[in-house]
Image (tube, rainbow, N blue to C red):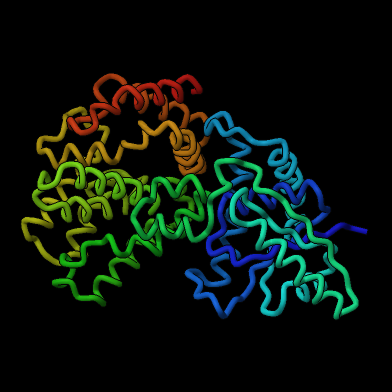
Length: 395
């Protein structure tokens, strides 16, 4: 008889901590059911269907990462390696469902023999013990039995992470730090919800709310197009996060930081086409329905992200825009995932050999001159060059 484990939670959102519990459970059970509970007492940030998709996407992200370890530099635990080997061989070993009644009833109905509970080092033990005792009483009243299997979060870096912590990071605009705690697909999905507050509304029909909602939906759809592994809302969020930091460190430096924000939102709306930057600028001019000095300046900032040009941007704002778009190159923690995501985005369009040739050419061009233009980014130059050289050696 198959051993089935039932892992229930609100998963609002599904974090890397949750994912690590699923991997550990796959080493103990023949099949794991991840169950999203409807909890009327909690106001969820994401719908049940959105949360189920986050779980599915997280599993796919981890499996994809396992295929690109040379690029992303990830180090998988023994449990993650074993779990992903099982999942890639037969993805039915993980089922994703939702339920509205008591967890024990849903588990019994699904044929599970054990309830799976994740436990962090600090703060969870007493609550888990109380829940386990209560479940035992409820099961006794039903003349049924379920084991409770407590799985400690296996990675120290994830022991203090919770869904509420991740949401707080997004609410504060700390999108880069949030990348540590959710997989790329979940991060991108959360950006769609949380980036709306960062879009400068005043450039669309004098801040008309309906027009602004339309523009944001347009942006989200464009950046969410199939195949956009890297040039998506997570990339926009990454740039906005660091721009916010620069604004705090250098108050009054930017004449109008909202112009930079506007340019960041539109700079990759068209991607992978000839003259993508010019086309992205044209989309901004069209949607903003105006040719004010601010809109024209934002369009020019978008053109500053055409990194094929050897000419350095002229204005300080254009240099910052140029450097923000390349900032990921200096990020030792996230560079590997960037390299993987760019590869996954372009490989279906051109094939591996053509991609390798084009990528080598691009990376070598970066190294021929200074990567960053603005003095704010000078301390990051050596880190960026080191990361680029490391990737170049792979091609």
